[in-house]
Image 1 (cartoon, rainbow, N blue to C red):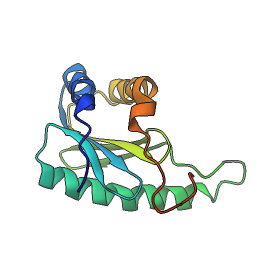
Image 2: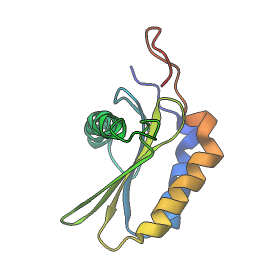
Image 3: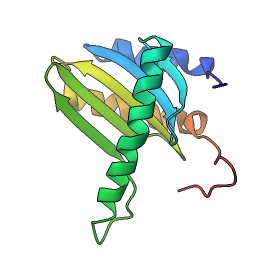
Length: 135
């Protein structure tokens, strides 16, 4: 069973209310488990969280191709017909994902996501599963 972190609800709501055109907000673990959500139903949040796990893995693999980088994924932005998807590292083995409609201010979204991660990074971090090392 996934433990929902209800104490983050107000923080996620604040992000949604602070950036017009925000549709869904999900906090997930590195292995794709939903930890918190706002603006979406649990089934949609679970599907998005699972997809995010694959995306962060792909981004990390690409990141290792940069010789002077550390290979860690910080932010992925995908523009699709109808809107934007943002995935940001949010602490050790945790991620913040946002779906927003076309009219979203991309700069404002990035700034507000960074602010949220900085404020609640400790709350978003998850311990390693089964003795894994923290990446």
